Structures are given as structure tokens and as C-alpha cells.
Image 1 (cartoon, rainbow, N blue to C red):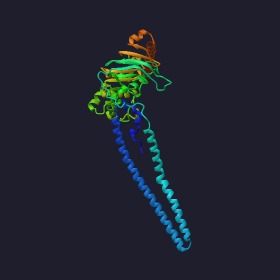
Image 2: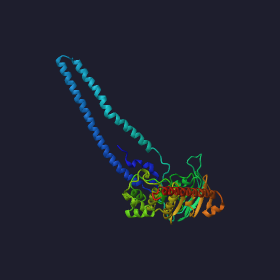
Image 3: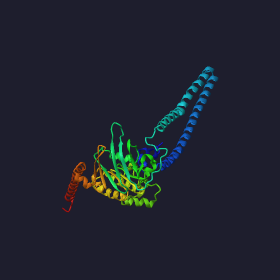
Image 4: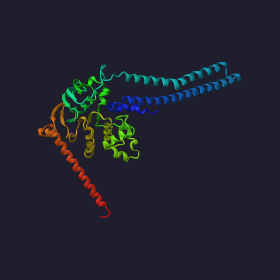
Length: 407
């Protein structure tokens, strides 16, 4: 029997948490389990008929053999002892065959499934709400990291006393070399983990003192690795707010600059995207993720390296859509490409889990420090990429001209 589609949601648990759709997924899972129950009932019914047929065959075979043996006794070719021996042998053969064919396999499978189920149920969650936890109350949406220390492994600290604020309605960017702890900040903000020391607050409320569901309802995420469900484009956009109308979904797609692309598809919003969105390009998947976040309409927005995997041309198009999403929202941008954070109200440069520099783009360039060196390296790489594209386009044009019959 095929595994229910919802059983693969463990792969996408972060996306479920980002949009607070645990109840909806539980409902979908219940629906799938109802279908599974109906299929299991049919299987057990067919297995019952199989066992009945197996017993009927054994019984009929034994009857025929005993009749033949009785005839042989009557004719004098067998004795009564032979008759009893044949009967005993047939019984001894039928019982284990019937047991092996029906009972043993089901018992072993049942015991294995029960053992695995209890192993999962005994796993304790790392992050739980306090008994007296309250709903997060968003007044303005200001975020504050206060002397935050964190490590996945005690022997390898990731953040070492990080402190900064994201004022309500402003944009703050976190940049730095690979491994500096940038993405860890977004995970802590969503409370996938709790800080080891210090505190993270939203409007003065410690995240450890509020309910996780209310926290995640207030934050929208556009991640680096866009995860789409194996369903339609419309379903994936509506995932931001499952109660949204078709008109609202269309409006979100337009704001994310994916409306024209969807209209060109034969099936439009009903187009299947494949597992994890494999039927869409990187830019198309990213626009769908942006539309999903627009539909959620959160007061706080987190952009976790949302354009790092895209080429320069696509990045500029996606950045235009992100500018629309982040307008008038408290926005935390975690970026690898510095060109996407030039307009941030403040840029924080992380290095080995600590804040090395902070300020505006122009101010950091003037400091001629780590940020300025990173900017120069990326600028040179961008210029080289654009030059290479121009050379390729020139070569392609030359080939076309040489192949033109008019020549």
C-alpha cells in the first residue's frame, strides 16, 4: 500500500511551523488516515477470505485423502494403523502451514509497528511552552537580542553575546562570512531552539514566555531553501493563509511578480509543482514563497538568504518583490550577497559569533574593515560574471550571423 502523502511532512516541518498550520496538517492527516483505514479494512477482508480459502483447501484435501485411505482399508491394501497414520500426518502438516501462512506474519509485523510507534512517542521535544505561557501581543513589532549566547554543541559556541535591536518598521541586515551564525539567529527567533543565555524579545516579551504558535503566526519567513509541497501552485501560495480567497491568492501572486508566469501555464494555479517544487526553477520557487508570505501578511518578516542561490539577473527581480513585501514591516534580513542589503537601516556584520561591525552601508564602506573587504570581493565577482555573460552573448550572436543564409 502506498504511504499517505501527509506522512512525508516530517521533511517539511519547518515550513509547517513558519506558517503555524499544525491544525490544518492534523486535519489533513486525519483525512489520510481515514482513507488508510478503509484500505486496511479491504486488505483485512481479503486476507480473511484468503485464510478461509486456505482452510477450505486444507479441509477438502484432508477429506479426499481420508476417503481414499478408507477405501484402501476396505480393499485390504491398508490397515487401520495406516489410516490413523495418514490422518495424523495430514493434521500435523496442515496446522503449521496455516499458522505460517496467516498468523505469524501479521503478529510479527504488528509487534514491529508497535515498537516503532512507542519509540517515537517517547521522544521528548526540545522546546516546549511553559505552563503559564501567554499569547504574544504584537503592538509595534520591535525585536531585541540581548546578550544572546547559543551553541548546538557545548564544545562549539555559535553566538557569543550578540546584542542588537530591530526597531518597529525598520530593516536590519545580518551579514558575515559562512559559519558566522547568521542563520542560527533566524532559528532562534522562530524558537526552534532556546538560547543558552541572554534573551530574545518582541515588544519586550521574552520568547520563552509566550506560546510558540502565537509567535510563529506573527513572523513571516522567506528561506534560502524554498520548500514547496507536492501539490498545486495555488495550494502552495494559499499555505500562507489557508482561509484566503481566490482573489487574495491572485493579488499575492501579482505582488510577488509571479502572476504573469502562472497565467502562461496551461493549468494556471492548478499546475503541479512536484516534490519540493522540482518542476519550477529557482526563481519561480522563490516567487511562490514570497507570494505565500505576502498572503500571510505578518507584522515581522525574516529573509534568510532569500536570493543567495540565484543568478544576478534573477536576484534583482526577486529583490524588487522582496522590497514590496518588507515595506512598513519590521524586517530582519540575513544575507550572503551584500548587494541586497544596501538600503537597510542598519547592517550588522557577524564574525565567529560576535558583532564585528555595525552601521549603514556607506558608513561601513568608509570604515574600510571586514564589510568593505567583503563588498569589494563580491563587486569584483559580479563584474566578472556580467563580463562573462556579455562575452557569451557576443559569441552566440557571432554564431547566428555566420549561420544566417543571407550572408
